[in-house]
Image (cartoon, rainbow, N blue to C red; front, side, top):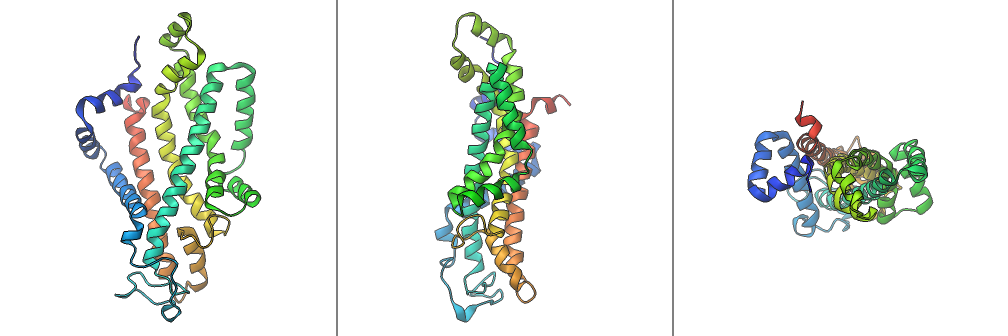
Length: 295
C-alpha cells in the first residue's frame, strides 16, 4: 500500500541518522538552530535547577533586601532578600512544565477530536465544529482568566486553563489535513477491503497528520509560556510561593524606579525563551510543511 510524501522526513531520519539530520537542519536553518539552542538552555535550566541555582529561591534575607547585582547576588535580590538568579532559574521550570503540558494537552485533544470529526463527517462533525467556533470566539488569555477564576490558583489548573483555548486552534489545522488524507486513494482502498474506521484513523489518517500537528504545537508553545506568565503576573496563575517569571515581574513593578533589575532580568529570560520557541517553530514549519517546499 502506498505511503504519502509527508512521511518522507521520518524515513530520512531513520536512514541518515539524527546527527546528519540535525547538522543539515543547523546549516539550512541557522535561526531555527539558534532558537533550538535557546530552548535547550531553558530546558536544561529547568531540569537541573537545584544544581544551577546559587541558593534556595524561597529563602529570604531581610538584610539583603533590594540589593543590586553583586558578587553575592549576581542578579540582585528582591524585596524579601531572595536571590533573583535562583528565582529566574526555578521560574524556567515553571514555564517549561506548564508550557509543554498545556500545549501537549490542548493540541492532542484538539487534534484527535477533529481527526475523528473530519473522518466521520455528518452531524457529529457539524456539532464538533460549532463547539470549536464558540471556543475560538474568545481570546486565549480572556478564556484562561475566566477558567482560572472558576478553578482557582494552582499549577495544574493553569495547565487546564491554557490547554482548553488551544483545543480549537490546534484542531482546525489538523482537521484540514485529515480531510485531505480522508480522500486519498489508500484510505478508499482500506475502506473497500473492510478495514474498520478506527484502524484507518490510527493506521493512515493520524500518522499523516503528524507534520501539521508538530507545526501547530511548536507555534502554540511560545503562546503557552506567555499566557502562563501573564496569568502569574495578574495573580491568577501558579501559587504565589512558586517561582515564576510572571510573578517576579508583578512583584518588581512596585520597586521599578529604585530596583529596575527586578523586572529587567526576568523579562529578558521570558523574552529569550519565547523568542527561541518561535524561531524553532518557524524553522520546523518550513521543514515539515510540504506546501512551503514547493514555493
